[in-house]
Each structure stands twice: as C-alpha cells, then as structure tokens.
Length: 249
Image 1 (cartoon, rainbow, N blue to C red):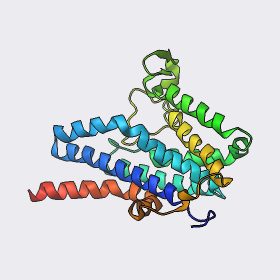
Image 2 (spheres, rainbow, N blue to C red):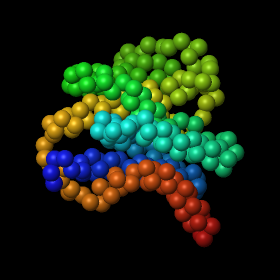
Image 3 (cartoon, rainbow, N blue to C red):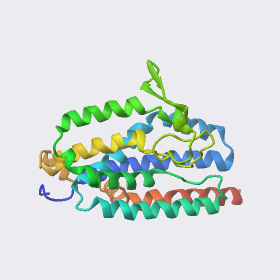
Image 4 (cartoon, rainbow, N blue to C red):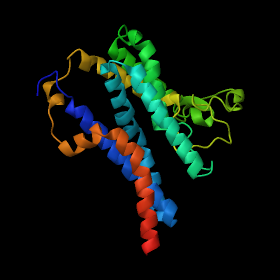
C-alpha cells in the first residue's frame, strides 16, 4: 500500500473501539431488559476500561479531522444526525432516556470547533500538545461531579453556579436533575479528540511508518469504515433482539 493510500490501522483501531462499545452496551441492555445483576456487574467492571475505547474512538476521529478537507461540513452533517437521534429517543422514551449530548453530538461539535482553530495546531509542537492534552483530560475527568484535579490526590471544587443552569450541560456542567442516555460533554473528552488531531499532524506530514497503511485485520477495518452506521444502528437492534428473546422464552 502506498503512503498516500488509506490508513488501515486507523480503520482497524476505530473498528475495535466500536465493537468494544457495542459489546459493552449489549451487557447493559441485557441487564436492563432481563433485570440481570450478573450482566450489570459485567458492565460495571468493563467501565474501568472505557477511557481506552474512548481514546481510540475520539482520538481516531481527531486524526481523521486533521486529514479532512472540510470539517465544518462533516461536523454539520453529523450534528444533524445527532439531533435526529435526540428527537427519536425523546419521542420513543417519552423524555425519560433522551440522548441529549451523546458521542455523535460531541464529535460533531468537536469537528466544527477544530475547523476554526486548526491553524493553531499547525503552530504547536505536537509532542507538547499531546502531553498537555493528556494532562488536561486527567485533570478535568471528574468535572461531572463538580471538581477537577488529579484523581483523589488533588481536588479543586468548582463554583456551584456553573451547575445551576440548564444550558451548560454540553460543556461539562450538568444540573443535578440532568439525564442523558449517552453523555459525552466537551470537557474532558475534547482533549482526547485534540490528541488525535496532533497525531494526525504526523500522519499528514508522512511521519508515520509504512505499516499503518497495510491491512492486517479486514474484519476490524470493515467496522471502522462503517463506524457511524454501526454506532447509530446497534442499540435499536440489540434492544429488538433482547425483547424478541424475552417474548419467545
């Protein structure tokens, strides 16, 4: 594969992340439909590994955004799909399990933001950018709970006023009553996306080994190329299958 060809490693990593997410969501769906504590415990256990899946998925999107010709157009289309998902989940679950700002909402907004600030990334040393974004992700990881810091060693509590409005949930400051079936606010996850953008700079400049262009796992590559369809469609299919099994047995 020539170096100006498709980056199969990126497809394969994204495909692996999507399949892991689907498996994780399947455990939760089974636990919900069949009231199974065993599957809920399995779901909770895998939550410890979620940041790895998130990095592969969001970071991979960041790499792709660095290589894209029009992130504003890509982000706009994806945001439209995300709004449809919000409307459908609101109507189907009667407002109880609405996806208010899920993974697709996040990615669409991140792409649009990157469209306007991409020239800044061209001026920043990628190694420093990756290091700073990694630190910021860890530092802001618990922002949902009202504080930032380094795990349990350092905690800086944020003003409660940030969490008293209904309009800042997308940024990472949800109200106590806020609920979303899928929730990925800009903070902290945009730092994973930005890490991918910095890595994408190396790819764009051709500073990656030739092996990243080689296809080793076509199965994973297929899922990576169709990640959007898989992410949007997997949950309805899983729910339908679970309810079908419950109806039969």
